[in-house]
Amino acid sequence: MPALRRTSVRLTAAAITLAVVAGGGILSATAASAADVPPSDIVLGIGADDSQRTLAWYSGADTTQVAQIALASDVVGDAFPGSSRNVPASGGLTTSGEFNRFTTLTGLEENTSYVYRVGSEGNWSPTYTINTPDFQGDFDFLFFGDPQIGSSGNVPGDAAGWTDTVNVATSTYPNAEMLFSAGDQVETANNESQYAAFLQPDQLREIPFVATNGNHDVGSKAYEQHFNTPNTDRTAGPGNGTSSGGDYWFIHKGVLFMDINSNSRDYTSHTAWIENVMAEHGDEAKWQVIAFHHSIYSAGPHATDSDVADRRNVLPTLFSNLGIDLVLQGHDHSYARSYLIRNGEKANPDEAAGADSVVAGPGGVLYVTANSSSGSKYYDLQASGFPWLSVSNQEKVRNYSAVEVSDSAITVKTLRSQANGTDLPVNSVVDQVTLTQADDPNTDSEQVQVVVPATAPGEFTWSIDGTNGLVDLGTAVQSGDHYAAIGTINPIRVTDTRTAGPEWAISAQVGDFTSGAKSFDGKYLGWTPSVTEAGGDAVAGAKVVSGFESGEGLSAASTLGNAAAGHAKGSAKLGAGLDLEIPVDVTDGTYQATLTLTALS
Image 1 (cartoon, rainbow, N blue to C red):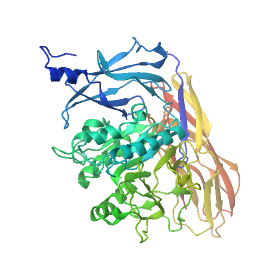
Image 2 (cartoon, helix red, strand yellow):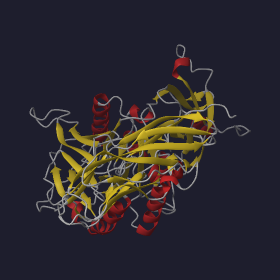
Image 3 (cartoon, one colour):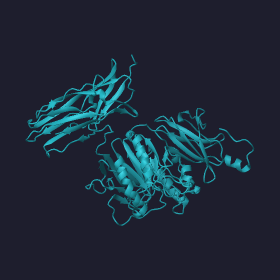
């Protein structure tokens, strides 16, 4: 008999969503000096998943470089822990004549503090700390609009404003898990002095930075050489031999983020890439977020640019069709928040301007445009109103946005990192909105999805009773040659007061149970329907045994309850006991399936 295992099974409600080698020889004086220059331009980047972080840095000479990482708990005094591990780096000559290095730290544990440094023996960077969060649950990240260091003509002044915004934001949100840029890190794409100023805040070495390619970044390979982005496809929205391009994605705590190079208007390339990422990873995520630089729903002068109008004519329908929830943008150096947009139009004509909460139905997408985070440049708002604008703001003080993510909502809170007089101090709120979904079958909250045919208006109604959309079958236990779990569906209330009493039926069908990439057939679920509250001549459907015993179980449409033609007027409540019997070779995991209910009359 196989060893006893316990497999947690949940059915959630969708209808009801059931739940190195150093070169030899004598170095020249110039090369020796370059080799002695400590590593610079260090950036901690986000990884492909929660267990990874990327690193990028520059060195003065083409020497073998590594990242060393160790548990912070192993630090004694000022010495870097001897228990550290070396992670090799790769790279090459940069456009500025230096050498860059990329590596990825893998196998990081959740809720753990690490220390790291980069370089080579005898020439190490300072030591920095990485604190990994829990890999599940709520989280915050910080979103920053166009720092564009050097845009004002005063690099030190721009850097001071940028650094102050980062300090204010991370002090206010000390547990923020990402620093997310809207693009235009610098004014001039190949200007290393501007990059050095942009990279001054040490937070960029200790909190993962998410780079976006802006129009001021694209004109050089420096963007690609400074930022080590995960899952990057350089053929999607490509640059060329001298400019930076590519699209990339990552998943952080169940949120799929896609960052695209909007400098390229190769929509065929972008569309194919986004559709492929969504097809392969969309089901892993509770929220889908896209970021790109060129805002298509802003209030500033770029809103009427021909290239922006071109993007606005193409991208919104793609995003609505794919179920994107939130789009983060920059470029127009002023704050804007759209109404929920579906296929390029206001999704709900009744949505009020400035509403502090919005509920997105299918295809509804929220677009947010960030103001300047450094104060290097501001654009005035256009006088003419735009039909997409729910909120716009330009006070010519620095802003940042705190994005708070939970399973059930995303809240975007935009704050001043610079006071605007005594009445609007630092961290006063510019705008705040909470986004929820009208129906999301992939969460553990109340989720209802139904298919209802056309019937006599107002005479035949049915609904799922209760507020808990999660049907939890608990932990399956071994029972001879299989594992078994039982439970009950949320009751279904059916009311029919039509004079003719036409026949009706409620049926259900379950999909496969999945846990990440693992799955087992929905046929193993059976049920025993019942009428828990009689009325309207309703009768229960026939028992359906688990397909482990025989047949197709509930993977085939099965009747929960019905009433024959000529039935009495009235209301009934239908229930069903669930019986899940699965083979012992099903792999451990928490599995969910969707039980879709359909009413026919």
